[in-house]
Length: 591
Image 1 (spheres, helix red, strand yellow):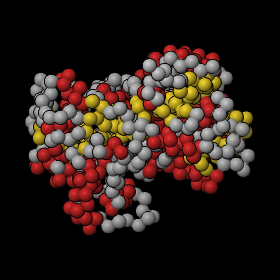
Image 2 (spheres, one colour):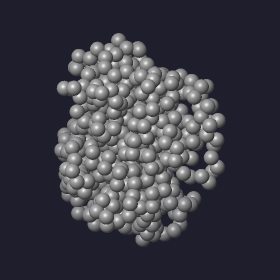
Image 3 (cartoon, rainbow, N blue to C red):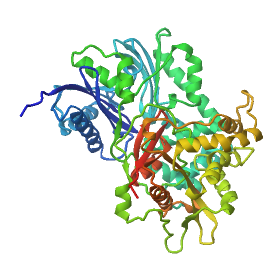
Image 4 (cartoon, one colour):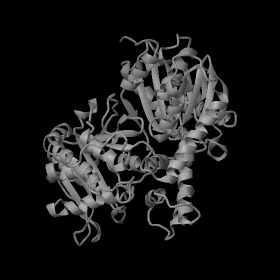
């Protein structure tokens, strides 16, 4: 029997507060694996960090061996960019990485641990000199020479600094909500949005202020960071308090950068806060043509690992597309186990929605609804009943339309009431609900009280591409006639929705063939919990299975950890990582 020669590889790790990613690269520049999983920052990440990171690295190693026909891996170098690996936390970070890599079965001659800004800069700058401004879970600015950090400002953690970061924005937003409730501060839409976040914890205390206290007690800083996009959203909708937080974030980040930046070379911008949204817009307006976007941080870790192995520094323009094209496997639960996650969990939109489009085709191994359905003894097309006379899942009736439109509006602001946000309360329903009720009414399910009153719904389109085409023929034209496209200077929330009517997103990606269906789910607070969200989705997936659909996808905000954990729990897996969202999906069994 021929013995396969070992495959010479390097390993790059990006270990952050919210997620960790491992990549494996060959000397020829081939990316053998990219695997994502939970974060492993000692100051902000929940869970057994060493076990979580070991699973990520071990899965990447197994994937790489499969790609080289089972040959052993000769790991020449490993570079890990670790959030919190500065001098104060370096000892722990080095021990964590070395233990995790060793337990995963890899034996590089040495493991080099660098701070996360170092890998972010290497993931965005083709040149070895320049500056970095990073704002994600934390915030920091650095200047680099020969890909080595020579000066930095901030990155001090959420207690002492990280001004302008996602956690900073989230905490400022929650403080503003608390001040509103306490009558120490102005009224703000952030208060209702924060109530939606506290609702995910279960029954309240009876005092909204104490509910916020409980929230910050039981959630890690990284988990609280999921409120940052809500702050950005409220700012975009014109909320004065949220706008002030965004403006202060922009000012703080630019002030941090000014401490280290020489004003000449390019500036790499990285992190979720600077990927999209009003903070990014403000920073880019100031930096103009000096700004460069970073690729995934694991790209930088792989480039640095290749250089450490003695290979020529791989070209950024080669490694970044190779990582983007590689199917991303996802392991572990990204948050606590929340099978009854509260709030609106709208999945995608018409045609797969704002978070379900795009390209890149980064698949996971896929969910397995057949396994989940078999375990619970589901019958295709079934509609689970409520417990003990509680809410029950039923088929959609035409007379439900007005009530479901109302639910769409009452959950339309990141799970909170959007009534005050829009002048025309029907717009959300026209985009995210109406076409499903008209074009696919047999695939709509309703959560009802015992008296028949709707508390929530799930709507599906078995074939997203065909659904988009039918919407273009018979749904959008009527709405475009009713709602003319607004002028460019109109930046109101209503105008944004009307522009969606005129330019609806289209779902794209190699995962679409195997996961052609998509769905939306919205539930009022009264109907959240007690497994109602799970039963709605089970009914929808059973219905799609009975229709012979091979798989389903949906979109979810990347920082909506409760929803991600819920979807993971019921068998969905990540199909694509987008800058601010995940596309998740599951294969369906043959009926």
